[in-house]
Image (cartoon, rainbow, N blue to C red; front, side, top):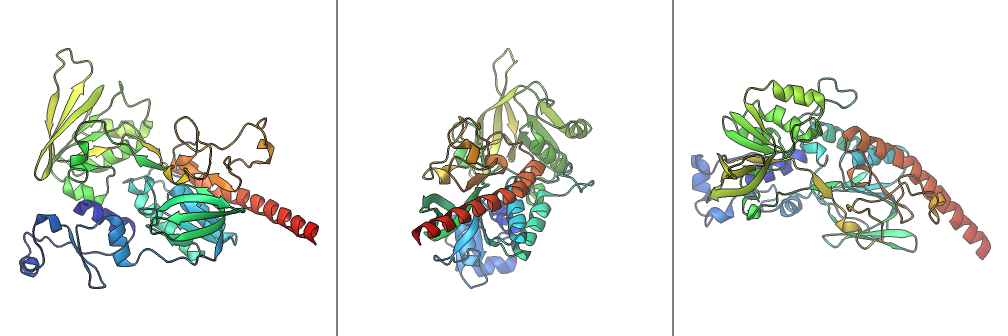
Length: 410
């Protein structure tokens, strides 16, 4: 696990931390002389409880810091929300304010992909823009204020429906019960299909652009791949720090996938160059990490790759739906793996389904993981608000059915 990734995890979870350079700080050099055995121990983390972690992953760090709560297995929540991006946070806030008991799970940090955006400028009510981290932090605090229980990081391994109650199993083997489930798990970052890419994971490759990455690239030449709005926001932000940015896109221009205001902003930046019809073919590096990227321009008659020297490659090439935890639920997915909702009313039992309800009664899908959703922060928040009234409708219908069953038994 790279230092930058652990720093990002702590920052996005609003956990205070101090960074000490073990190479230049004399006190650190003296302290670590008898603790470490070599470079494989780094990054070294000293936790408040006295434990020392050597090159931990995010789950190990979260456990050491006490960020993962314990759940009472006999308790049944009204709704369990899987994913704390804009959709999941909105659902948690509105559900909690309306008196529902809410549990929220996310395996990394509040905000999802939006939480990594350097600046969101087209969200209603923020004319000067707001960072994804700040927006997520405010929503996170609102959810806590109204009584939602948030397990972040808390990864849901699977969900099953047993006698009308959903049972969610976490990776730490805890089980959480809920009357309804909201899938707001979003999507996971795509990785380029180039040989040996995994060698450079966390060693020169990044999927977001925050203040931490900005400090790392100050005065350096960097490469960024992607032509969507997230890529555009990252380009505008990083251009304030990097000496130059080479932007690689597969298409002929940015107009098909990026908002006009971002295209205009990028066009005015003197240190940004857009390389159209360019494809990443290989990565090269040394013991420290990435050193060069190889790029093929599709209209180049010579067929030769261009070699670009850089130690920092930013990837904004989209994401795939995060639905692995749903594999045991029987929920219906579309051909691309997104969760289906809004069923054709001519289908069997479709008239009983609510707009955001999946093929499994009581299981809803919102945000980026939902098929045919608009991949925008505002749309995700709208889904999160809309699903709460549908949860109420489902629970009312369920309570009425249970009441009728008790009458018939009597």
